[in-house]
Length: 120
Picture 1: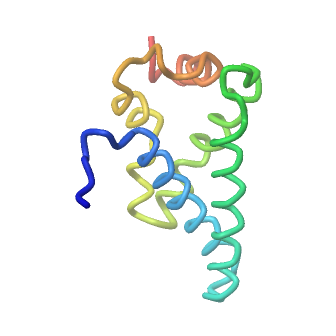
Picture 2 (picture 1 turned 120 degrees about the vertical axis):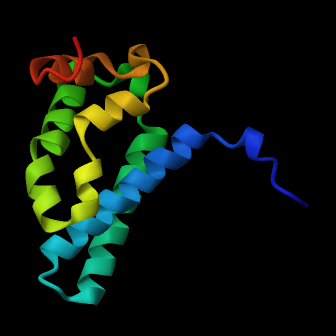
Picture 3 (picture 1 turned 90 degrees about the horizontal axis):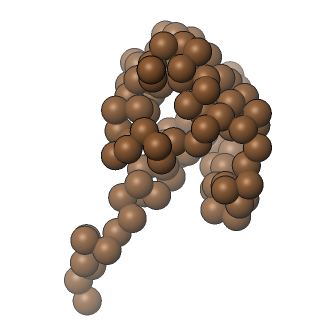
């Protein structure tokens, strides 16, 4: 039974891939090069992010919480980039560029992006 790729929610898949990337990166940083600890930390971080993203009602996500999440993630872009070259692609500018419509980005995140000059 083939998969109809036109029915795949690619935004959701991309978000999950981003969670895996960040969880893996944080797991390897926190674990002090212990591969088992890194895998466990990454799995726990991914599970928490997945549950939060899937089950938290995003339309009710307070603007200040979304702002703080964006500020935390994008505030450490340079540190991520120094630790892992691939992380250089995880930027606020790339987030805006990847959105099909800026209006789809949470107002709290947009507020942060305006403050740092990524969105007008």
